[in-house]
Image 1: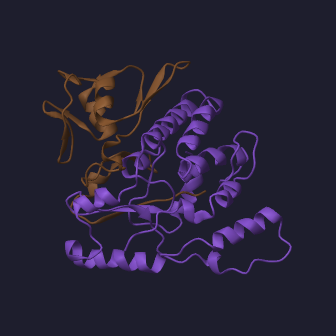
Image 2: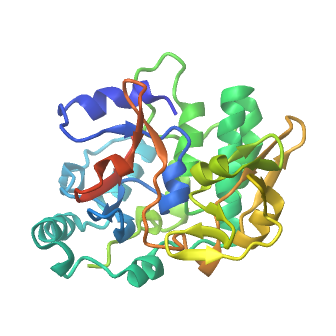
Length: 215
Length: 114
């Protein structure tokens, strides 16, 4: 919601591809993103050939790090949870390359029916969560942050495995007002009953929030 | 879609939801859902459209706004493989649409700095 926090990250590599901002999470509603990184593939004719799925393309060095002794308990737990994140990066990157080279002949390019069938489930509660989140975001902009909170709490309750709704809400209360980067730990706070580490541990790990690509 | 009243222009409805109101119904890609009463000239009855598409409608009475959520047809996030074309924003403030990349393969990656 603050594009300026993301700008240095998005521009660091001097990208030659479009790098745009979705301040209202409309791509979540339209494509089914529930976490990041996630991606969809779209062919030359504007048709999806893969629905929203986890989209790591490079193994994170965090997964191979040695966790130092003596860290604060919550930081230690967070590092361990990050190290345990499922890794599909190599296979997913190879799949993208295969599709780029072969187009519709790629085994990884799905039929329209497969794309729809494999897209994220969307229950009535989860659709309502999207509406609640959007309403909260609108009120945050037009009225103020406090007006958004009750709607975001409801979005979290209705769609507990949507980590984008949670992390977006948490970061606005755990990131200091004068910070130039968002708080990544998103720990216990006075506004929401939930926080990143406890929700992750309660769900059995980050894997509960990841849509692994079916390759 | 944020609303201050439950009747909107068909173009606004289409642009915000990805569903295009037509005489035969509410359409997205190859999918058309009959929606009698949802379209009157160029005006969409949002409640009628929401009912036909399984879209939730939530209301903040204090601030006088509604939010219309995504469709739940078929129980999936996608009702069609025709890609939606949401309006996004470049860092220079200009508008960006995925359809501007038509003719090229696109991998649309969602990420965040948090």
